[in-house]
Length: 93
Image (cartoon, rainbow, N blue to C red; front, side, top):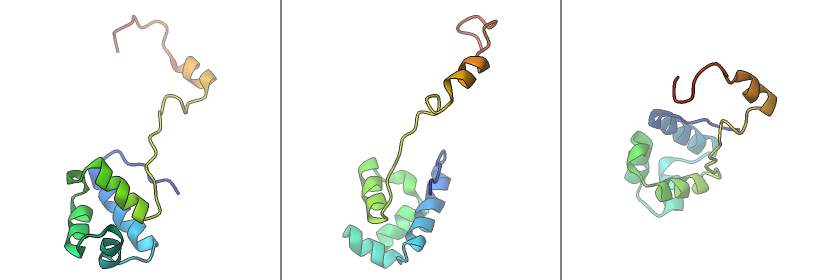
């Protein structure tokens, strides 16, 4: 299942949900990561303060991965071309 994240607050919810879906307590996840339970609690409370490397380690411990998706590339070419307004001069919205 995909968990789209556009805000850090969403990441907070997803990390907790994934941990619980894996049947892990904070202490069990902490053991997998080699940190204390309070560190996992801190990460879940405020995931915006960890590094990308640490986030990837947490995701790996949760049997998850981060995917970066180009939203423009995922649109069908015909739809993308049809949605472009050819009457708007370049550089203007």
